[in-house]
Image 1 (cartoon, rainbow, N blue to C red):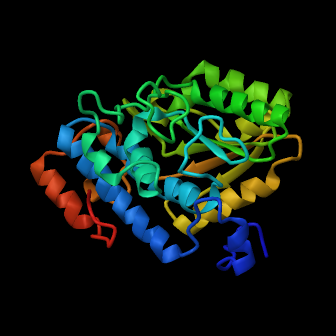
Image 2 (image 1 turned 90 degrees about the horizontal axis):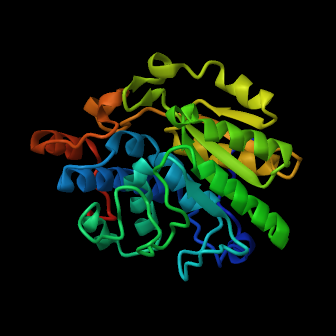
Length: 306
């Protein structure tokens, strides 16, 4: 079996080993979840005429792959310390709609609560927050550049505790313009934080335009490698099977003295034709006509809209 091969469904013995963790072996169900998550994203942003649909739609496969198949996590009871389970930190917190949808659909809180997104006194703030006690969220995020530092701290804490599970973190390519990111990247390599897997949503877009126009990132794989990381490039970030295979490959590369980064190429707005590949839907809500068009493009699933 190569690094990029999708293993067959786990045996009964393997399933018993994983019974304490949330796990979906049925890939057809994972694809269905991707479709439903996209419907949730568009609905949430439309309902309050506020939010960030573009990056959220582009990262649906990543979140479904992570929470549905790769991450060893326990939705209930949710515990902040995450002892003996994998932990995830979202740095580019503005894509909260995709995270909230996946958290709800994997059992962290009721799906009906998605209807409260960005409303007064909700637990589902526009950017993830901890003061309202939303299960699944361990740090507030949205102030760009900070999430990787928090993830590194959690990874070091697991090392000190003798906890063998992994820390995952998602950041955006535009976010890498923040200096704190590169301080964290240097720190993790220097301290050999090799239980850490960072994924960069490499969609080439940010709020003001294409990243190459705003401030070019240059040769991103070469930069991460030069900073001492084990670098993996995923060309098909909107292919669910490819994302699962790459996340599993990254886990096999940990424990060797280097942190691991996945540079994941996605398309902003993926799944809705008029939102795809443009920064204009970074933080813009659809009007009624656009909402109707988007929902017609996104398949209805057995999971049902909230």
